[in-house]
Amino acid sequence: MNNLKELKIWNKAIDLAVNVYKATSTFPNDERFGLISQSRRAAVSIPSNIAEGAGRNSTKEFNHFLGIANGSSYELQTQLVIANKLAILESEILDPLLTQIDELQKMTYGFQQMLEKKINKKT
Image (cartoon, rainbow, N blue to C red):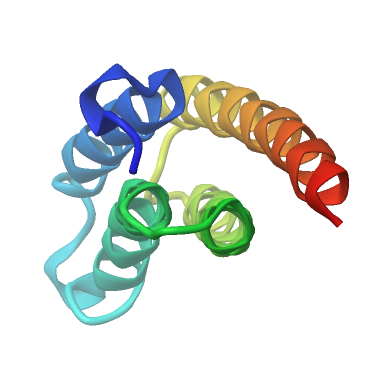
């Protein structure tokens, strides 16, 4: 078990999810079941999977859930770029979100590499 509140990666993922909620609040209502829902779901999935992995009993499971979180970050990145290309998300809002996502992806990758080393030591 990990102390979730002390995990920097989880805290940054929470911040990203909050920022995505704020950014998508300006999307048109006809995107309520499209890009708004999809983007918010992907954004919430990131810290949720980090939390689920942290709560698991093994390093291998934690690593697995970090992979799922990372996949959700790429999904979110794609949805936000699409929203920008559809002119419903301005570049001034998109760019800082993409920076957050990029930082989170790098952190996730680094964390996974560290966990892989732990897993390989045990075998």
